[in-house]
Every structure is written in structure tokens, then in C-alpha cells.
Image (cartoon, rainbow, N blue to C red; front, side, top):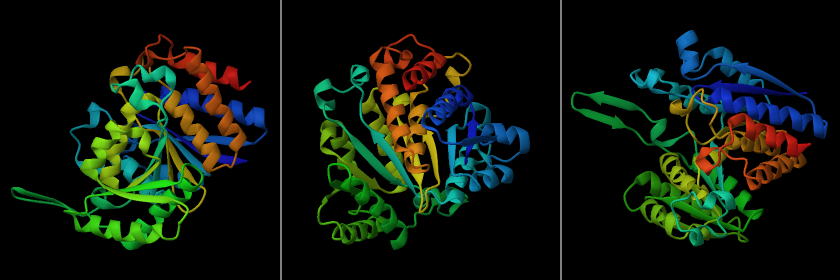
Length: 347
């Protein structure tokens, strides 16, 4: 029996999570594995209930689980709170607590959504990339100070922090097209100079994988000019956060993209890359496919249920091919329509 913690979060979170857990339970029944789901609070909902964006009871449950499913956190209701107690702080602390230092964000546009993307269709032909973002270091977790008219955010990286995430990128590349691109700002930043040194050294342990380096500003341009050239991208926390949002436009809809946050063991945190979309809340129009595809990543990386993961990905593909998509994909289907379509195709 595998324990999975379910964190609905805020905004559209409960709506898309209902579809994702329905798919997960359906897959468990079809493929014959036992799973237990337990829910807990995080983000704004947790602040309203307990005053903390990550209650200790939530973290304790996550630490006892084989995997964690998270929908989204945040919303305008909590925007005026101090940074230390905002909903997003709960997510950062959860990642740190779980030790999930590598965030994997695959981007492979579906043909149905290419017309929705702002890039010319020919630029999106053959795009199939993964961004591996370092998740627990850098500016987001460095010391923060404000004195008078001055504010400081400290960016710190160690050799071990860089090496472990770069190795994950190379390991992934071996199962793909065997090319890793490391992205930094080594012409300006000392942390990036260390990043480049470590990545270049690690690359020598993987002679079967091609290795290249790009500055982040150049990479941002190339990501929209020649996205099909990228296979596995590895980069630090801040750059990864920005570049993955940029890469989301390649898919035509941010609602289609899942993510996995992994550490040294099999436990992981799985979530779509989009936010809580408060403007869509309660309308039944949110795209649940990114959340459902995050379930597939959970089955693959944490539970070892590869056949179930592939079946969910195929079921989503079939549903989209059949035109069962929400408004972001140019369709008229509801959130629940999409979830039901995936379950039907799983059966």
C-alpha cells in the first residue's frame, strides 16, 4: 500500500485535483497496485485555518508518504502578507523539507495545441525537451535583508548542490537524445562561474552525452528561436524558474505541463507548473491535464508503475486528439469532461 499525500492548495486546486486523483485511483484499479490518499492543507487555505502556509502536520504527513501531489498555492487574498508567511513560502519550505532539489519540467507540444502557441508551427516541430532546475539553493533560499533604502538577497551555491542536480540531468539525457545544455551567467556571477566549473567536470564522467554551455540571456533567445535543438537543460533555481515559464509557451498552454521535484530517494513532489488561477476558480473551465500528467510522473518516478504512467499519458493524448479540451486549447470541454475522458480511455 503506497501512501500519497494530496495537497489541493488554493484557487482551481481542488477542481483539478479531483480529476487527477480520480485518474490515479482508476489506474490503480486497472493495473492492480494499492494506494492510499490522505489530504492536508498548504498555502492560503492553510494560512486561513492555522496561520501557517505549511503546518507541521502537513509536513509530517508528506514525510511519511511515498509521494506528494500538489495542485497550486496563492491568490490575491494573501498578497499583502509578509513574504515569510505568504502561501508560496509553504511550497518553498515543503521542497526544502522533502529534500527535493531537482525539478523536472518536460515540454513536448501536442499537435492540437501548436496552433495555440505564439510561435510559428514550424519552430515547434520536433520540440521535446526537459528542464532540470535546481530547487533548494540560490537566491530563493539565501539570506534576505532590508536596511533603510537597501535590500539584499544572497545567492549561494556549493559544489555538492551543483553536482547532484547536474548528474540527474546527465542521467536523464542518457535515456533521451544524449545532449545536456548547462545554463549560467558566468560572465558576471561568481556562483555561475562555480556552476560552470562543476558542470564541466561532471560532464567528463558522461563521455556518451554531448555537453554544451550557454549564457542565460542567450539561452532565453534560443529557446524561442530554435527550441527543437534542446534536449536536457540544467540550470540554477532563479534561471530555471524563468526559463521554464518561457518554455511553457512552446506547449501552447501552460495548463498542459506537469512537473516532478525529486531528491536522492524515490519520494517526490508532483504538480502542474501553472498557478492557482483565481480568475477561473469555481467555473469548471480549468485545464486539468497538467495535473493529470503529474500523476503519470508520480507513478513513474516514485511508485515504479511505468505501465500505468504510459497509459495515462496515452489516455491524455487520445482525449486531446478527440478534441476534449478546455478553452485554453480552443475547446469547450469542462474540467470534469477532461478527467472523465482520460478515465474512459484508461479503461
